[in-house]
Length: 239
Image 1 (cartoon, rainbow, N blue to C red):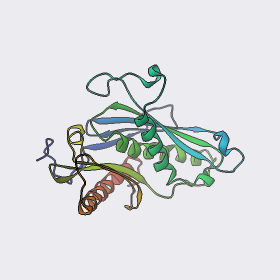
Image 2: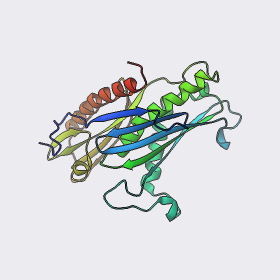
Image 3: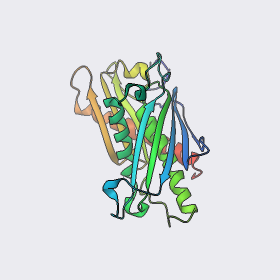
Image 4: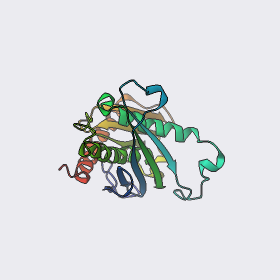
């Protein structure tokens, strides 16, 4: 039995509070259990230098953890003068995940910057960030359509993410920190709402694992993504 009394295939309590930050073109306060991430989407009518005059847009992301988002205080990365490798890896993952479902040509020469700030961490911050970032991005793009800057939403698919792992030889869905810190295998799945694969990150922490275990985690991830995608749509008023 998991410490949270959840079944192996059961998500934590998940919510998306759309419109949380009033100044951003799109925003969402995302909660995966005790992991809380504020995602905001800002639209700029320009693109990075490497894309100028190429008729295409860009979607990028920044990620950070607030000092007391964890059990003990962590220093602000700005105070240290540089980002950690983990931060850079996560924000690149978020950016890749979102760009995979956006028609950048249709977006035009403008950039959407997604900021994901972890308010409270209890495992799965990157998966919560990706899932909430999609809601914020959708609203920002919807505003561009409403303002007459785009004819239609340049979105091909919905994207969400969830963690899976093997703890005590049992594949489980949506790990909290206690489970993640003792997992034999740790995995993150970024999928579309239809279950198509965008990215999978999987690591054996103790010993190699069999292919059957990967397939079981994939099955669990698709179940979880199906639920998360439905919650995203409800937050956006789409169902």
